[in-house]
Image (cartoon, rainbow, N blue to C red; front, top):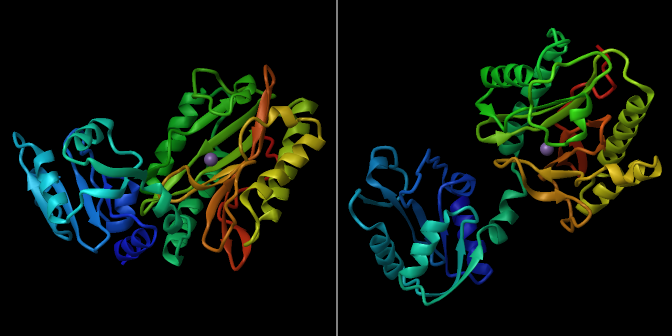
Length: 358
Ligand SMILES: [Mn+2]
């Protein structure tokens, strides 16, 4: 069980315990998915001795039967109960892991309840080692998630795109993803014409027109696992400059992909993409890292950037998504999801990468 594995790793690293609030780490360790805990304290207390207990609001009483739990009712002070669990587990000092995304108001209250001797550390510092290495089942979910976005890309090429507003296309993509999967990874990005010079453009009222390069960036979710794809398409023949940057981005993406191997550092993959783009004279217009880890979170480790010291291993999954953005003119980005399998990089997303001119 993942929780046992986590506890022994935590102990090995000299931690006394962990406080894990709802999120992907809690889901990863226990399978527990808590929708909208909001302000009500919900936390899994884990001790390096192997004990664990969930403290949760009583409104979840009927849905949580697989973990030892203590419930609190509205009107009660949950922090008193938390103090009681910490005392029972003999947790009063030492290194304690805290979920990175825990609400500040919870943490402030926890800091007030007799924790004089604790030294807090982010949960990610330990759990990253488990989360980064996906098992076969996790990879299967990611493959499925990737298939969905490939399919949506193929379908959207036959939609009547000319004259459509960016926001309308984004909504149509979202709807189709939702029909085919468990949900979207983030609100789809549709960036057309000069808007494509902004890597994270929010789709707006601009209508797609002839000569545009259009960046489409979207993802699906399957059994908790995300995909994330970007394709750049052309409506009618774009000007030569735009075609040129597209081809440079495509070469950079391919080069980075071919660099992926077990034993290679993440930053070597970044450097491979960056070299191609710099050699073509567009280095200053590639304004972000080459990619990010992907899994239960859309952005997780390993990050594929110039500072990426993580050594790639089998089971690691991440994106490769170089781009060039020319202010006032437009931009291009190509993004695939890649897994390290049998020592080599393997693309999970397989949609067409040659420039599609509609
Ligand atoms: Mn991405």
